[in-house]
Image (cartoon, rainbow, N blue to C red; front, side):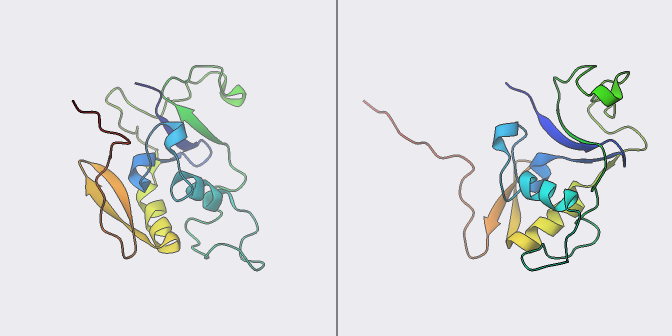
Length: 150
């Protein structure tokens, strides 16, 4: 099946879930319009001081600058994060996979920002979000590269 990853801020006790911003949960499924753009915005330090900077959305851009951040898979083990030696890297999740008290999922706030700057919207397909670019129709979630028949 593979390992599922999340973007975690251990300093602020916040998390971004990939499928809530239109990406898959496997690390190679993260895209420049989803999780990679989210990281760019969250980690920006000097945004707004020159041309080519991100649209200033103060609750997202720079929010995690300087914090202890990690991309953590569900197969992570104790010792994977040297500065958190005594804790399981996924200690913020309960046995059912929900967030424990004190942790916040900021995926929705990040997805609102991404929709604004990347000019797309989301279509919910079977509990997963698919990006729809302005002026495009929703494509099926999967399409075959090749069809073999007799």
